[in-house]
Length: 116
Length: 110
Image (tube, rainbow over all chains, first blue to last red; front, side, top):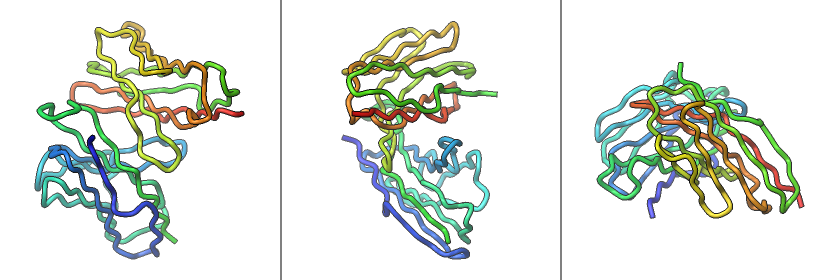
């Protein structure tokens, strides 16, 4: 089975702190994604990566950056956390069809981040 | 603009009853439509995927339908169980886009 793991299930940080959210997938997927999920707004795409060292802005990239130095790992960075970044963060990965699962996105369990 | 609208926003049903969730979309061109189930505090998990040529697909007690002409999909849950309580998210893929609905929150009550 495809497995997408995220470094923390729950995280509490202070305003202004630099925050790293890590995501690892074990299926050699090329594409990886970071979303945030807020009540009434659904999932919104922050950043995605087509492959190693490649990144593209999603719909709401402001206040975030990403890093993809290795194929299996995609990091989301909050340079200076703010209270409006309190949210559920979901990582997903997707193959380009050469692997199991075709184009399906597989989601991690999520990280509930609270910024106080 | 690509949009995916789900209804109802939330739903409460008694255990054992059936229910139907709706998804209307304006994504064009259309590639496929997925229904995801998201348990509270978890990531979404795919239930079904439907392409243009498919109009019904089942996964156990879940049956999804697709009408590509009217751009509507439904997810029917039969003989609901307490474990069906979750958010159900409709996701429509276009040529190079992925559009998420806001989800329907289902609560199955004993």
